[in-house]
Structure formats: structure tokens, C-alpha cells
Length: 292
Image 1 (spheres, rainbow, N blue to C red):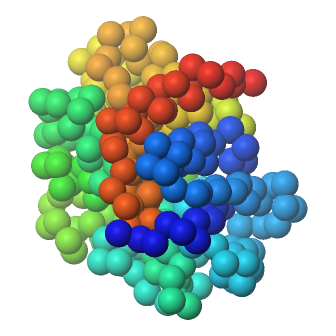
Image 2 (image 1 turned 135 degrees about the horizontal axis):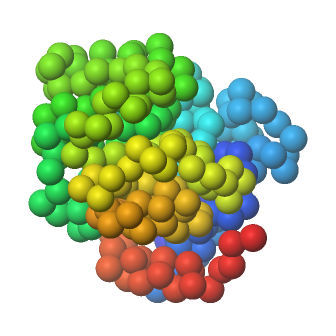
């Protein structure tokens, strides 16, 4: 158990993070556990800093006595060179969403992949995993890809606006899971590969409050396709709503947001949070906060 007498100071670094529910989610659970816990937003847009400034922001957080940072789009990969150590999962994924600052060291972890896996088990149990298409090969996409193959996806097709990046992720996945399990390409391949897929996972910023819209042509969706979105602000994205209206089984981004937070909270504090209580916190927060 961590010594909670000093309290905890943590933060979220990313672009357009004003609507994020992660800070109040952490703080409410800390209140329930009797911990003094302050969670600050470090929004690149409000700070007027580019994503490449993540090293400066991390250095400032260390100097200011932060206990840790959550890292989100677009810094999950850019933060890597500025860390002293990576957990095995973060090293394998090449992406970090949680940085623990302790004993003068910055250690990167990835709780995105386990968060998605737990959410998928709860919300899309028994979904077919023969062939899955993943949109997005960034930090979040890498975590989701790892989770999907860990869950048993036989063939994963990763597509990205940058086809080379998708190919690099597929090659990295092949080294861990087998070369026949993943392939990469650009978004132009989507119509061809989605027709034979069992499921679609969306892991780009499209659909967020600051990036509204659909990440694909709605005409490519069909009722027997399951659809998962990792965006949770808003909880019902245009993709989730459109897929549900077509009769698809859908998974919104809420579960992943909660379960990655459960693991991050434990890493920051050394205290085990109550996952079911955090799910209840999240439901309340979503209903309390209006999306503009």
C-alpha cells in the first residue's frame, strides 16, 4: 500500500482533452478510498504547445512533484524517448498511456490494451474473431491490436491514413503473434477487406467532440458486422449510433476508458480501486456532463 499521507498529484497530457472524464473518474474513486488526490489536465491546445513538447511537459511535471501522468493522443509514442524505463507491455506495444514518476525515474506503462480487452469481454462476449479490421495504427491502435490478437483474433487487418505506419504495426504484431495473424495497409483497402470481416474496431480521433463525423462510408457497414469504438466523448459516437441503427452489435468506448483508468490508478497509488464502483462513477459522469 502506498503512503497516502502526502496525497497524490497526477495529470493528463494530450490535445483537446477538456471533455475528458478521466480526471473526475480518478478523483471520485480516490474520495471513496479516503485518498487526497488531485488530477490536473495539461491540454496542449490550451498551453499552446505542439505534441513534440511532451518531453518538456514531462520534465516540468517531474520538477513539480507529480506522481504520474496519463498520456493520450497525440503523445503516446512521442513520449517514449523521454522515459527512463518501459514496462514489458509498453515496450512491446511501442506506446505509453501511463507514466509513473517515482524515485526520480519516469516509467512508462500501457493500460490501454488490457482496458480494451476487459471491455470487449464484458460487452462483446462470444463475438466472432475470425477476421477483424482495425482503423488506426497510432498508439491507441497498437494497444487495441495487441488486445485483439491476445483475445484470439485469427486475422487482423490494420488500416491507417498512413499505410506505411499500418504496415510497421502489422510487422511488429507478426513478430509477437505470428506473421500470418496481421497485415497492414492504407484506408483505400477498407471496402475490399471489410466485406469479409467479422468485426470492425475504430481507434482514431474521429468522432471525438473536437473531431466529429464518421471514420468511414456508412454504406460499408452491414448488420452482421460487430463494431467497437474506443472514443467515449461522446459515448455514442456517429459510428456507434449508425452501426446500432443498422442492427450491428456495438461496443462504445466507455468500458475501455474505465478499465484503463482502473489499472492506471493502481499504478499511481499502489492502492487497488473498485472496478465496479468506477464503472458506476463513469455512468454518473456521462449522464451529468453535457457534450457541446
